[in-house]
Image (tube, rainbow, N blue to C red; front, side):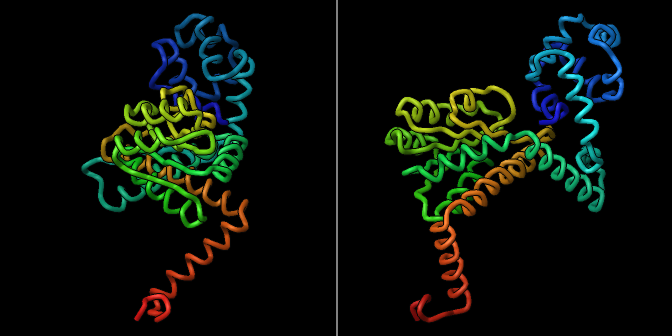
Length: 288
């Protein structure tokens, strides 16, 4: 997982000293690779202990490990992962389209890099073996939840997605050890989703969370933690980019589940065939 991705994901929750270190690292990563912890502290204007705590907050044992991660991130970075500008009211259509495309590419790349493959594998096993699946989200996340439920239903899985928080909570109250809740919340603190997750854990059901990076009320009790990225703070873009990142995660899960289940693939082929026949006006399907 890229050091830059980690920093961007938790930048909003950093202290004043840590925020200075995050900004300097993102703006001048090549300088970090040549500085000791004390030198970095002096340049940024913080204490050396703040540098060490910053590295540890990002999940590294200390500053040397953090610096190696920065060097590795620099070696891996490509121009396509950079966010090129923000959309403004004065942008023409072509400029707006280019910026939006760039933002989406950035979000997709960072979401992919933010997640460990082993977590996806765990999620696939839990979903594959679940008796019932509740996919919960509100607002834009509810749209992603419904999309995922349709996909899983095509594989023959009992997947439920309701936009109403009360219904989600009521369904979770009937769940047990053989069931799984997939909780989608970009902020990780949506009150309705927190309640559903807590109810599921009280009933010993499994929980898979899809949230922003870091410990959140939704992700903390989850059995599997998956992360999405939506850095843009603009009201016009935040929901769009959040859904873009979330859709990547559910599509990866769906394809992995399809690969892992031969019966599921057969059902998917059958559903596609039935829909195709209906569109072509096949009497045996349309009933005419």
